[in-house]
Length: 314
Image 1: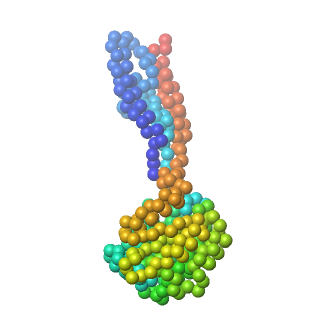
Image 2: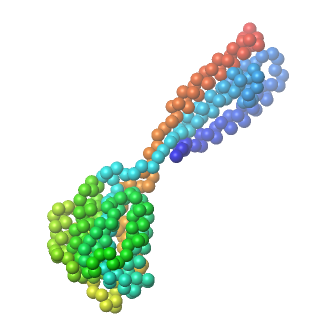
Image 3: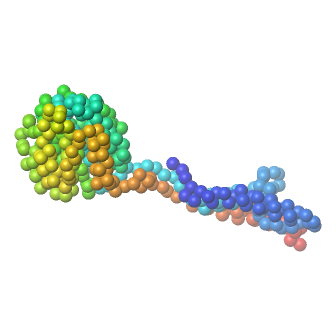
């Protein structure tokens, strides 16, 4: 993309043209013989005999003003390793997520909230882990949010054995952040049940994650579901997982609660790069400046020479 860092400077050119026209008009009254009025008092048009004495200096002036306005070209870059926040969303896709205490059901509401969260964090790598009785990494942390949103939109139940393995989901999400070089890594773990299929107790897994990664990983757990739904939610375990890993438990009882969870995580885990910081600009004024000086010098020389030939120098 192209821009002028000091774009108001560009308005100097029409102002100078206007002032020059007035000076020339005033100087023409009562003129006897050749009078040297300077390089910018001729009308800036290309005519025979005026190209060197008028058009060249006016072009040089235009190039000088463009240089002063600082033309720049830029491109959008992705954050380097170590910048931004790496995030993994671990989403429960067990059968209980089809409960309709949320409209239309828990899974669809959870997916919608996740999509909005991703849209609001363009500078961060985000990944997706789905888990039921077993976990699967659908997408590692990536800047390709378009593909990630497709994975979330298409997430369904049935391709994993039914059950709830919270510890396995957490372990898989933590492994997905193992190669991350960012200073801040986040797991958002959503569950609407209790551990029924895991091999290792979820709290033991949380302790291991804490020992291996220390303060570099924060785990935010989200307990989704209403008490009247008939499904039990192990809020105590989810709270322990979060406390062991620099996070907190969010209790979600409706769609609005879930959206506020992601808003809270946004505020707690602010990205280190604002959107404008992803644009890199390179100045291009030097070439314009060199050409401006050459044209101005050439125009002045030809104008002085024409003045001498017409007898103004005698």
